[in-house]
Amino acid sequence: MLLQVCLNGARAVAQHPALTADVTLAAADAARAVAAGAREIHVHPKDAEGDDSLASRDVERWLVALREACPGVPIGVTTGAWIEPDVERRLAAISEWSVLPDFASVNWHEAGADEVAALLLRRGVRIEAGIWDATGLDAWRRSPVHADTMRVLVEMPDEAADMVRRHAEGLIAHVRLDDPGIPILLHGEQRSAWPAFTLAVELGLDSRIGLEDTLTLPDGRTAPDNAALVRSAAAFVTAADAGPAPSATLAET
Image (tube, rainbow, N blue to C red; front, side, top):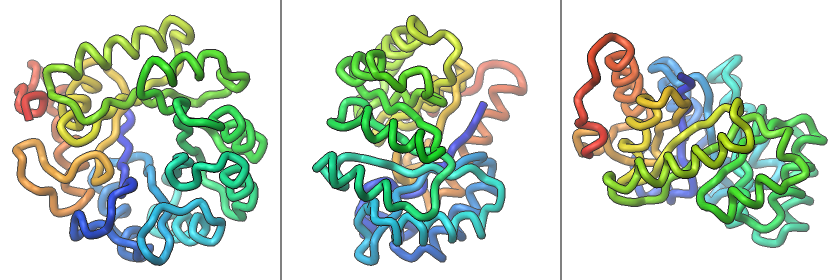
């Protein structure tokens, strides 16, 4: 099971003490998360004010700092349309990147997904297809770059724990109909973060955890940093691998 740490997301830095616009501090946090068991990093590069950025200078600063702190660890970035809603401007920003990530997530419910993915592929950047709903799933299925997707992110919204299984398994089943062998990374956010992680372990899927998706540990306490979240996730995976079914605590959080 691949465990990815999602460092920050679109959250404002004021939401948690470990969220920061300082790349040195963020890189140190990432290194601790990798030491705790994360094998990949997903990050939203920030500008000096702490806002998500696609600007080449910001993407370069974050990638260089993270690679220095976490040598050899694959790093992915977001291409979210909320950063730059205008598709042509988004494409122009990505075309100017001087330092490239190993992979990038593209949300297929967003306008311009095909064009963004095609540009990234031409530049040698692998693609994670973000699938939140049936609209995005259908758009990805019809995409001319469908076959070039490295994996699918099945992404659960902030929803009650008892809704996660039905929602996730429905999307997973439809992904598998088109592409039975494609890797799937299942994750949630807020209330669905730990239930989705629990389900990913049960189903043998990849997953992620980090301050982008949740600020709390499975027992509801605020996590001090990304490393604490990764340690909790890694411990749960170890327990699941070791023997009888682990406690349902995570799924019920």
